[in-house]
Length: 111
Image 1: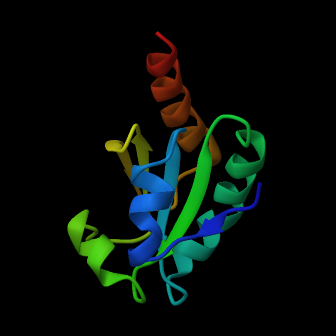
Image 2: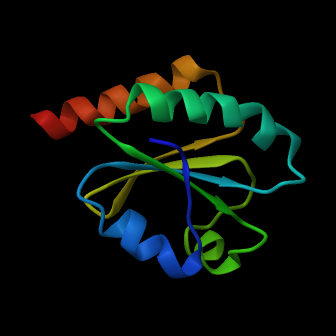
């Protein structure tokens, strides 16, 4: 499943009301590190496609959601489970960091 682009008006439906965990990529087109992590986010989306949903939201075009979640720097990745933010990863992190963050929360969810 490809990474879905969400907006202020679809965030609640696509993320908060989602039946599965959602990884949200807060980004902007001018952000170099955002472009660097985009391929990592796409790989995670492919590898975990049966387990999580991965979405991205442009903070320039959707300031309400970015403000609501206190986004101060991008890229910021947030993991939501059952409509609640459970973790935040800030910056262009390696895939292994992101994968281990996901694994920790997915393990907790199974228990």
